[in-house]
Image (cartoon, rainbow, N blue to C red; front, top):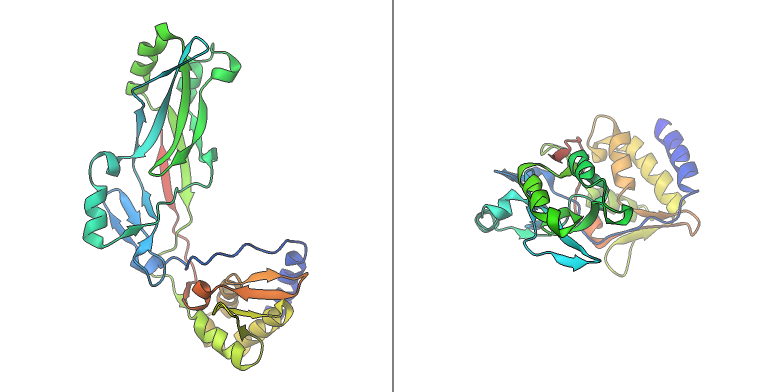
Amino acid sequence: MRLLSLCLAVVSCLAALPAQAQTDTPPLDHARTIRESEMVFVPYMGMNRGPVFYTQYMQVPTDSAASVAGMRRFFVNLYPTAHQNDLYNGFISRNGITDARLLPIPSAGSCQPSAGIADLLRTMPTNYRPTVVGGNYPFVCGLSIYVFPAEEAAVRAYIAANAVITLRVSVPLCATNSPLLNVPAINQRLVTDGVLQTSPNLGVEGNSWNVLFESAKLAQLSPSLFVTSDPQVGWETYIKSFTLNLTAQTATMSPAAASNSAPICTPTPLVITFG
């Protein structure tokens, strides 16, 4: 009864949460990961489209500067070297890739001004010290720099010789040999048992409580469906494919999730650093 006990524990935690967001984007197919030079491509299941991640970056200051309140303002952007060195287009073409053009960080929080540039410009007015600006693919983030006109050349020389942005990112990827959970097969069993129904958009849906308990019971009775030696691991992966709203007592799975296998992830994060 270990899975059912776990199910109760999960339910008690989920009951306090709002409904989870759902996406029509298929899961990543880690088994087809392509690593080449400074690029890592992970396609979506059943597609040649997916995000391209970069392991090496370079800082590129803008040539022009705007005059603001008697100061000069320019930006230093962090670009993948693969774009600056003309490696990207060949990589995309050779592998038939459609780039999803996603940034590896959800916000600018993983980018910071370096201690050196902060110290160099410490005498600037508080609101005009180096600040992080969000990325715009392919550049991951940047710095807004204000300087007095007489100091611009010296600051640019410092930037040319030193890293002025620190980047720390861990992209949560899975090992290429992570086992795959056959989500459609599990769905079919639960449809046959009357737990799930096919939704109008060709996903699946059912009562959240029934889905939780009946899928946990299925994992106990038919552990081979859940792939791993410990079916609890596969069951947790399966449940994460749903949007659960315990207040409304609904469980819905998008068409993309319902029609594709899901990796039972062996974590192999991609660590990206600069500065």
